[in-house]
Image (cartoon, rainbow, N blue to C red; front, side):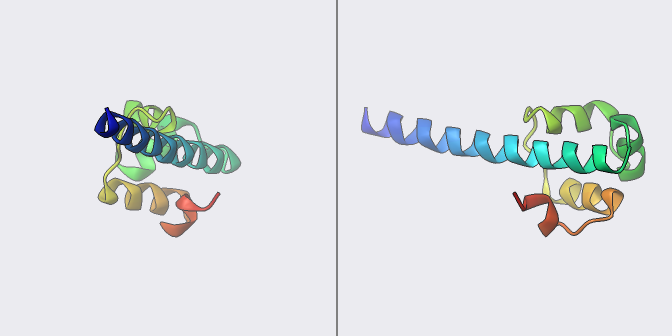
Length: 82
């Protein structure tokens, strides 16, 4: 039972990170007046992938984090700031 509780906490933390990251991407995208499709084009990613990131449905790779940062013209670190 103890291990199940730890696993649930770990998953919740993971989900929180994905939610916060997705919200940050969405906020920056909207600030720049970009649609998901436009951001996807600039980042060389599929448009549905951007939506999945913003909805915290996808655990994004470091390579794709960098692509999104470049497309949004921010540092990778900026994507993780609250």
